Image (cartoon, rainbow, N blue to C red; front, side, top):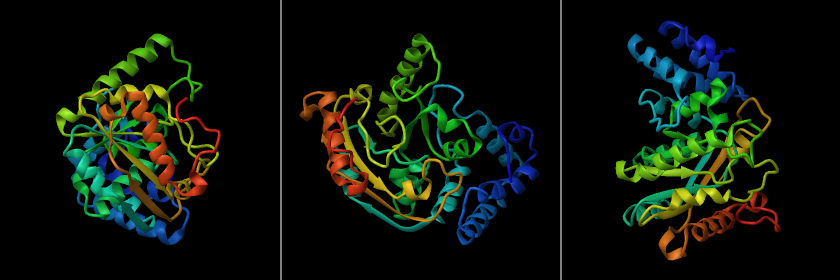
Length: 303
């Protein structure tokens, strides 16, 4: 079923309840997985009241419109975990104790490689499957404007906690004035640095865009500003499998094995500077990736 954002805003709850499972099913290629995902979504939607349906509809219509913290909609988060979880052949989460350790030492920023539009959705579902909803529920992911454009990607964003950020001119052709770009970036940065006060954990993909050649690229050096928080600990995150699940250029998802590896925390203070800490994080992410995802030999850590 095709469903546009414009159509969504006018749907009555009963129509939304019927449309959502079919809409999400069209984005899964493998028949058995599509059937399982559709069943999982229908079971969740069947528990919603009309009032809750309106909340879901309005949240989907508005998420990402402003530079602000968008917390995951409680109605959608478990639906996302059920739906995306049907696409895992296997799930492996290594080094979760490193996240626990970092959280006892100070504010935490998780930094990882970027493979697919479903990276964050997969991370959230995997942590939930491993019984670590306590960590998944604290993650707030920095997201570029493309995440909120198409309705399918917007659905994923609405299921998660996200912080919009204007996409850097280094990775985007969007025509935004330098003044507006700076204003939006400063607002996002301010919110991001305030998250530890709310008990939340910032998650960033510092490449700024999904890999185009299958290998990790350089980190955008401007990301170091998010690390300027007293006592900040970086947890490197290397993950693989979402590039198979939802590769660039594909309109549908396929079942895949998914693996996350969290590395040893990096103290920004001990690293010497926020730029040095970001460089150290790049090397830590690189080293834990499978060989086919590691950056080319001449790739600089920061760009």
